[in-house]
Image (cartoon, rainbow, N blue to C red; front, top):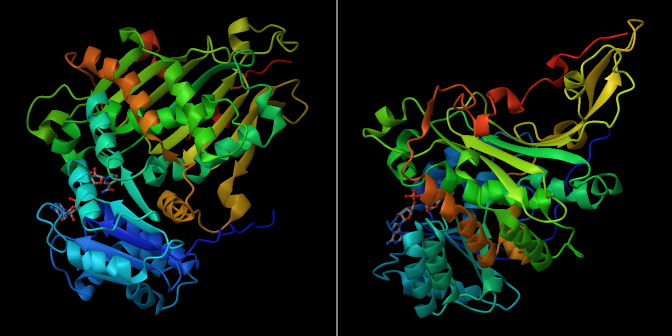
Length: 493
Ligand code: NAD
């Protein structure tokens, strides 16, 4: 297949002001993403990238700290030796203390030097959420909150409903909702966006996308790493807050939402909100919490925090009544992979069933598998006849749309897409305040009901506790990266 290189949309000249500009998020994600966009020509020499940091730092030290995170871009075949130096010319370093306000005057001067109505001025708060409120107030008192200003924040947006509401109030006290960009980086992933293309740009799926044709949906977000250095931070959070409240519920929304009438930020978000509001609080038996065996040793104390969770969700509306959404996520699991698997209903009658039990027939449903990472792609599992004269032997074959094969080259990281969307003023892939609150409204009762229950222990390198959801054994789950061909086809003549 001919390679299709991704086209880049035009982005207006902009100022990015990264507050917490020398922190981990800034150095590991934000600046490397901006460097890739610079290499691609979307970030031009007219941009300014202002790193506002609490400590004074020289350009050379900043470059030395950033360089290791840009290695992939630096060693890319098309990157020239001078590119990193040229990129660094766009970077301005400002000393800024959010709490004392020291440095705010200098930042204001810098911002006003280029302030123009058509030049977006994007403040990215790469600091702890406890500093979101003080940061907004400081920007306001420094006089840099202009009509063209935008604000970017990301998780954790609260610990529960009440704290999420408080954060929203702090942001909205200074910025209009239309200026606020709440990142859930899952929404910037190419395959996640492709889910919308798949559903709403093709007719063949939409007519099947309901409880008449779909048996159930599974979503797995599996990590192989443990909590490591982040143990004490993680212990206050756990898998439900860290992964389900945001990323996984966003995936559920994209699978379950009704088609909006336009691909427009508020219409897409209205439809996602309806899904969140249609979620029914699961029974206790439909929540399985797990903890990997070494977790307490790593943390240095006993803990009820879950490093794994599986949930059976019900979306209470006409389209999805009776279709369970099984979701699971965990650390120290067998593979690192994120996948959505749509399993269609069994055929009403099997003309090949001669001599087979009905249970065998159920083994061969159609499945649509959307792989978010690694090796992004979409597969449609169909039942086919094994070639050869050995009778009518059926096996699951697949139509495989591998993004790598189709588009070649590298797929941009989610942050690249999302950062450019902030400059383009496109909020479609960002969460609105009411969405964040609706997600917490669903999560809060689960947290409350399970807090005192000790999680089931599981071995590292497995797919979670053996006794899984509502008596469903581990074999019920469709593990990512399974080779579909290895599922035992039934042979019969
Ligand atoms: P970090 O500790 O590495 O960086 C925080 C930065 O805030 C530091 O550079 C620190 O100097 C600065 N800071 C603290 N107090 C300040 C003050 N008074 N004035 C000015 N600057 C101040 O943390 P991080 O990993 O970059 O995370 C920042 C936030 O982003 C956290 O809420 C985190 O949960 C979230 N986050 C991080 C990542 C990631 O990949 N690191 C991913 C998603 C979300």
